[in-house]
Image (tube, rainbow, N blue to C red):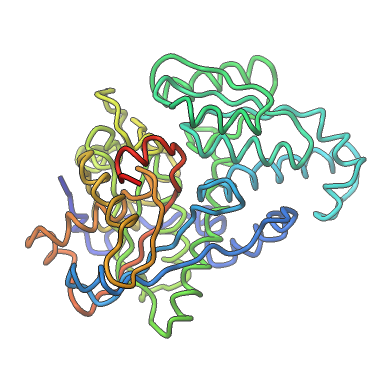
Amino acid sequence: MAFLNNQPSGRRPPLMPGDRAMLGENAPQQVRPYLSLWPEFQPTPTFRMPNLAGRLGIGSLFVKDEGKRLGLGSFKALGGAYAVMRLVHGHVEQRLGRSVAIEDLLTPRAREIAAELTVGCATDGNHGRSVAAGARLMGCRSVIFVHAGVSAARTDAIRSFADEVVRVAGTYDDSVDEALRVCTERRWQVVSDTSWPGYEATPGLIAQGYTILAQEALQQIAGFGEDGPTHVFLQAGVGGFAGAIACFMTEKLGAARPKFVIVEPDRAACLLESFRRGEISRIAQGEPTIMAGLECYQPSLVAWRILLACADQFQSIPEEAAMEAMRILGRPRGHDPIVIAGESGAAGLAGLLAATRDAAQRDALGLGLQSRLLLVNTETATDPASYEAIVGQ
C-alpha cells in the first residue's frame, strides 16, 4: 500500500525553526565531538550496487551499511548513546558549577558524578543497546524496558551492556508507557527515541545523532564521482530516523533535495495511516511483524511534523518483502558486495523493490535510468538464528 504526498512543496507545512536548528546541516558538527570519545567511532561504508541497479532499471543504487556502527550493529548507536552523553555533560556541569570540556567527561571525577544518574528507555533492541552502551561509557546506570515481541537473542544483547532489563507485557508502545511511569516515579532520566507533547528535547538529541550517517553518505556518494541521491527510501518505526535524515538532507541540499519514501511494515504502518487520516494517529495492535525494530503503533510527534513537510510517499510492505530483500542483500549477484541486513535493515530495499515493480508507483516517483537511489541498512543480523532461517546462511 502506498500514499503519495501530492501537495506541492510550497503548500506543505514548513519545517519548524527548532527542527531546522536541531537537524540542519550543522548538526553533525555538534554530534561528532561526543561520539569521538568512543574509540570505535569511524564512518561506516556506503556500497555501490551496480548489478542490482541494472536489474531494477535505475541509474545508481547506494547502500549505507550501519551494521558495524560502533560495534553495536545498528544506526541507533549514534542516537541513544549521544543523548546520554549530552545528559551526563549537563549534569556534570551543573554539579561542578562550571563548564566542562567534552573530552573531560571520561575523567574519574566526571564519571563519579555521572554515577549519580540512572537512564531508562523502552526499546525493541537496538536503541536500548545504544543507551546502555553510552551509559556504560559515561559511568551512569541504565535500565532498559523491552516488550513481549523482543526476542531472547536481542534481549541478551541488551543485557551485555545494561545494568537491568525489564520485560513488559504488550507492544513497544506499552513498554514506552511503562518506562515513562517507572522513570518518573524513581526520578530517572528518560532517554526515549519517540516524542510526545512536552517531551521533545531528548528525542531531538537522539535524532541529531543520526545526522552523522546522512552526512557520511552524501560525502561517500560524492567520492564515487556521482551527484547526490534523487531518491531516498527510509524505513520507519515511530519515524525518528526517517525524520532526521529527511530534515538534514532537505536543509543541506535545498532545491536539489531527493524525494523521500517512508517504508513501514503492513502490520505497523502508523505513519502511513496517520497521513491517510490527516492527523497523527495511534493504530490498533495486530499480529507482530518480523521487522521488530519497526513495530510501532504511534508516530513520534517531532518525526510526524517533519515528515509532513518532507516526505514524498508513505508506503507499507508485507513480511515476505523484507525477507526477500534480506536474501538479495545477503546473496548478491555479480560483483555487488554482500550486505548482512536484519529484517528492519532490509525494509528500505523491500520498499524500493515494490516501487520498481509497480508501473504507477514507478512513474509517480520518477524512477528510471536517471535516478540515483540511497538506502540505509539500519541493522545487521541482530538475531542470528532468525537471519539464518530466512537467508539460509
